[in-house]
Length: 244
Ligand code: HEC
Image (cartoon, rainbow, N blue to C red; front, side, top):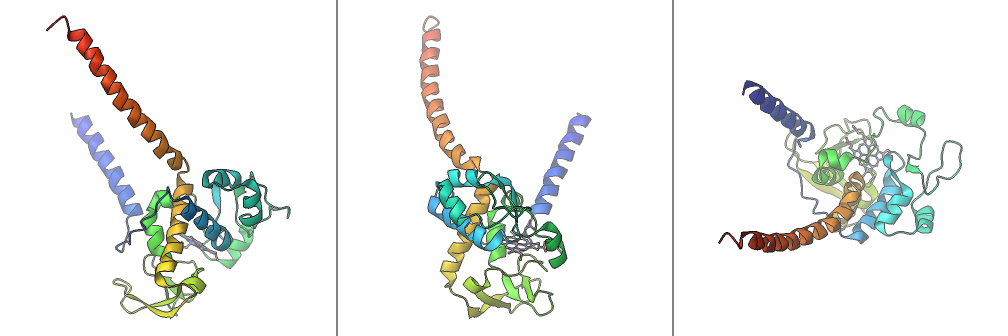
């Protein structure tokens, strides 16, 4: 019994640890992504390869798999999504993993904090966190890049989507941020939110590509279980016929 209690205690600690590691410090906005919306995933991929792959890799993903999952042909992927070359300077192939466009040594030199791989970020922090972070950059002269983030204090990433969103300032404090728009970018607030939603959907898909298939398989499993329940009921009736 004692052993069991210790085990339960240890497991609850484990759970608490993960909750703290992934726990948000500010209230998160709901991303409301829809993984069944293929157009949203395709747009998200487009934005990722336009704005993010310069610094962030997706080491556990390959271009051809992304294309297949999102309904894009290999030719389309090569022409529109692959903007990088490998170390020898040759174009990245359709079967390659998603590496960043700059060399790791350059990245280390240019940024104090190297940009992390984003394949598993949505699994670690959840889609709402990514959605909130990408909408929470604000101007802050005290930071080296002139920008801070209300959902990720002292984040070492520049606001790469500033031309779309524009600039915000923090009228509150670090603890209780209150963001307000100073200059609007190329998009309105709702349009910008949709861009961020698309990117978040893409990163959520990339964290667990089988999820797209899993929901479909799930339907079959449920249909099978319903059918099996019916068969089991008939069997039960047959077995008990002589008893009653
Ligand atoms: C100029 C380089 C650069 C570009 C381009 C860039 N990032 Fe980043 N990003 C960083 C750096 C550096 C960090 C690490 C920040 C830190 O930990 O302080 C980071 C961190 C992140 C994180 C937090 C990851 C974690 O687990 O802590 C997310 C999410 C993120 N970036 C998303 C994006 C998205 C989405 C794009 C494209 C729209 C993008 N980034 C483009 C440099 C970049």
